[in-house]
Figure 1 (spheres, rainbow, N blue to C red):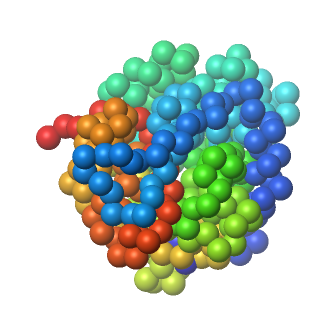
Figure 2: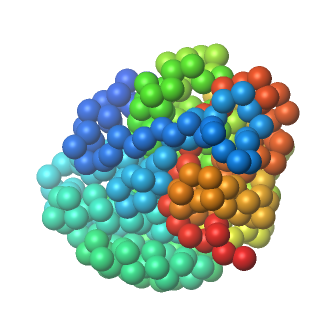
Length: 329
């Protein structure tokens, strides 16, 4: 499958690759910095899910509230002492920024986070609580990211891309290493897609361990970055974003993610904001799990019938982020 790109990573076929050994190295590097999140069996439930069995990987219980702590921690622990001392800068819809703030906090170094104006205020407050400096600029992530890149150039901080950096992708892939240890007999794995860092890492690790495992990516209907790129056969920049799931809404992804998704992901499903909200409410009512819209996206694909053959399949769902926006009207 194909994908879309934005940023500091060259859009060429020579973009650095990530392999299973990189993910395993990341797991060893960050073991003391992240949680081994639990896997919850969906049954029994009043509203049964349309699959033979469903396992939920609760990355919503990860430190800072999402899987992003994995990639950020792996990146920081991969830097030189001099690079670490200069501090970190990034742009984020919230979760990646929190992860960078956390990673910098563990090392006692500076973190500067650029946020788009549509970021929930609660995430800005949480960033400051971790000691990060917050700059709010631009209507969407892409505009905040341009400001972060310029700041890194002028002030000398180390810029960390939220999804197109090999160390970030390898760190995110540790989700799959854990998941397949906890639930080794999965047939299908559902993964939300924002820029593509999580699905790139997860697909690399999961396919490395089980080439027959079917990987399905999930995007919002209002931010089909990868789906549009697949249809075009090349990286695409979306003209606009029309979803409340801000952490799944870059207008463009990157070459490294394109190559991995093209090679390893079988299909991409699209879900509406309302379907994500229904899935978030299911997680809360049936499991007591508070997931943001983005965190419930993968489950939304299953609940909305995007996998017509799931009735006979053992399905793994990554609940990738915590929040309460999924329970609002």
